[in-house]
Image 1 (cartoon, helix red, strand yellow):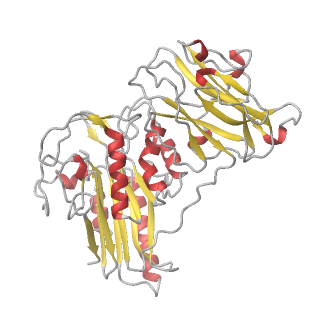
Image 2 (cartoon, one colour; image 1 turned 45 degrees about the vertical axis):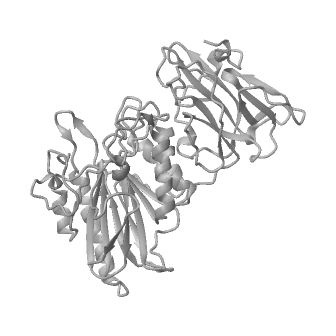
Image 3 (cartoon, helix red, strand yellow; image 1 turned 90 degrees about the vertical axis):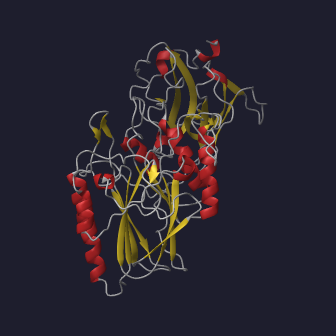
Length: 489
């Protein structure tokens, strides 16, 4: 272990441990903009560091070795309220670098910190000049699409095995704009609204490995980095389809990954960078693993990102991510032409018991929400006859496993995996005049990752369920590049 990684900037290691260890404010964008970074350091310890009394130091809750070493390493950030800074003595961090010592400028000297970190500190001038948050992301393929965050290219100088994703600092200067609810979803003047569904990206911490890949002719391909290919594929399809909304239908993350925040940002960055609204539900793998972020925290990350329509849903309803969105008519109209329902289909109960099922509280929430929306439409004299409802969830309903199911396109190459308990959510859909259809695809992953559908305003009332669980359900044509026209019928 390099000596530089066990040095601490304060005179005593104990002085930098915070008694209230917390998730970094960067995970939910709720940091007080009046706080500034006054220092940072890395602590390496054979065991988890003990709590201490100095409240200014805050541990970023991301273990830098990603739990691959007998030692643990943590980034600590010192924060101060800018109103309490003593003008004559207190310094704030205005720049951070990793690697070689940067050249000195403006009369200030760079100060060395552990693991190749250099900090430039000055007397506080303006909030925009000061560093206000510091975060850690992992892997050479990590990205940070959050506004005003800058991800450093050089990794922290930790002695980790080559297969362990490198730790990289990301820094926010000034006040990050809060991610308010984006503009309402609205049908275009041409009467169309295109939804791109993406399912089962299964991204990991780091680049990952693509195994068992085949080409268009069924020939085996060599192993390759997985996540860069997945992200590039999504980017290409977004540029081709130019959807009005992207819906992530679960298993965005692979199971048992050591750090989830980095992986989440990789999945949503293509949409954020293109200013495309997105919504999401969770799959059975998203929160699997001892180091996985709980769904509540993952939803907090998603909800606070730009262009996100993700919501945790009512607290008295089982699961995280039960919510609905409305797509309005063109122009400035408040007339809803489509209602989109999102439901948490939960996780796998056990290897023997199979998958969990939609709970009664979710069915009641859906029914009440659907009926209230329908009554509002019926009471509106300006409301037309057309309304399309879609329900998005990850794990298919038990009815989709029926061997007598009518297959419109493709063929059933393997059994449909679903819950063993039938809570009759399908019946609730039917009762609400929502017809559930499934189109199973057994294409390769490059085709089955998602699809685009285009809603064309017409007349009538129709609704569908859309599952994401390896194969895209409810498709007349499977695979990116095929726009599916769903007329009101």
